[in-house]
Length: 172
Image (cartoon, rainbow, N blue to C red; front, side):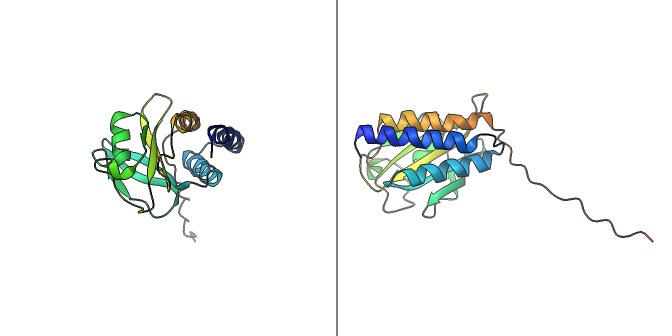
């Protein structure tokens, strides 16, 4: 895919994500939707997903598409940990050359990891995208993916679970 085709695809998927998320209030639903639409838009994406920040230096797998991902990643491990530590996008042209790379999928050849911030600027997750091609990601990917994940800043980072009230036994 050449530069212009890539930019056009990102423009289209960005519009689709914005339209789909219009009116949505749940962060988890938004993350799952974003991952699905991105993953389907690019043939070279073999793993697309979020690792959510669940502690001061710990990431936990979030919504994703692709093969089985690592469940937990500490900030001192792999590309995702490095991105979470630095809070900067990291582009890895050849994952086999990245010190400490976590090889979850042997077909992964290159990777981009983008930090996700809440509206106050706090790190809430990282978006991880793997490709089965070397040198798959560049500044175009970085620009669009940073723009796309910024759409998540409006969501509250709390996961809300509804527990129905317990039924009261019939009083006689």
